[in-house]
Each structure stands twice: as structure tokens, then as C-alpha cells.
Length: 81
Image (cartoon, rainbow, N blue to C red; front, side):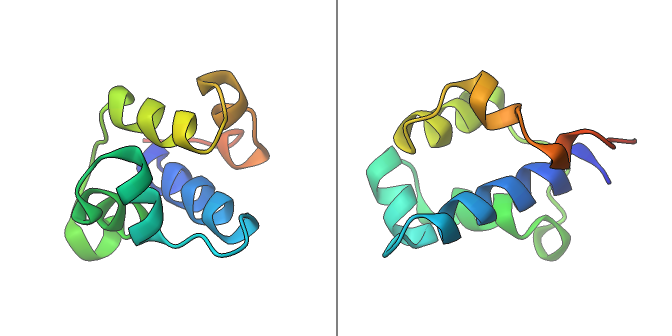
């Protein structure tokens, strides 16, 4: 799995884990355009190949996670280029 795909899986999983949270609500709470979150969770549809660490930080922080907690997930164990 590519890193961008792992980030997409992680963000989607975190959204699903928070009752009542949608990608739109996450974007609103993080202070970023909803298209940014949509592009992150749909990298195949948008041809997005990278995501800025600052953007990941904003999402993680909005969800009450540190970057360490965000990346401390099994989905990041099998990353390839």
C-alpha cells in the first residue's frame, strides 16, 4: 500500500469511529476546505499522490491525536512506493 492510500484509510477510519462526524464536519473543524479532506480520502479518484504533513497534523490535531498517535496504526506497517 502506498503512503497516501494508508493515510486515506486511517483518516476514513477515524471519521467512522467518531459518531456523527463526516468528512465535511472534519474539514470545517480543521479549518480547511472540504475538498482537501475529500481528496485525501479519495486519492484514486483525484490522482493525489502526496499530502502535506501540516495537513495531516491539522486533521490529527482536530481529532485530538498527536502525529505519533495518528501514524501509530497497523495500516502504516506495510508501506511501499
